[in-house]
Length: 143
Image (cartoon, rainbow, N blue to C red; front, side, top):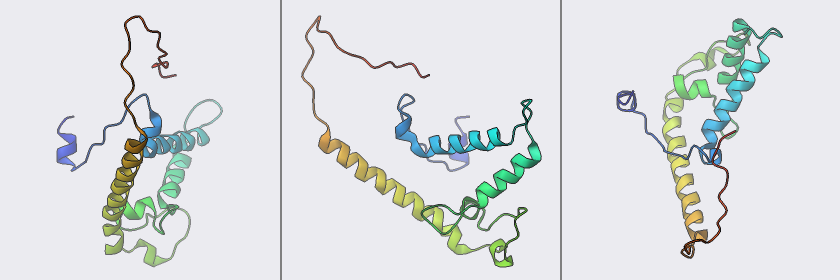
């Protein structure tokens, strides 16, 4: 498992497990996956795998809100075939889409830098605690 990042050239970003806001992209992906599965489950609880596969293809082919490309185009370099008809040029591999993930990653990295700078400007040191002083701790349990 430890070799996975190096084999697949994945850059890890560490975030707090108790602060889901700090990992917004992953949280949004999990929410979308749960919604997709929930909407394609029969009343008895069994998954309609054909409907789930169609929904997943539609999701991957849906244009991202801040670009004119889809997740499938970013990952594969072209739109994936699904049951919605599309023009033939959408199925052709484009070098423009191959460059897009690098530019998006660069932009996201700089967005994080700007957010860290804003946070650091607002952060301040707190006074040391005295022995026996009452403090309030937030609940660290997830649930």
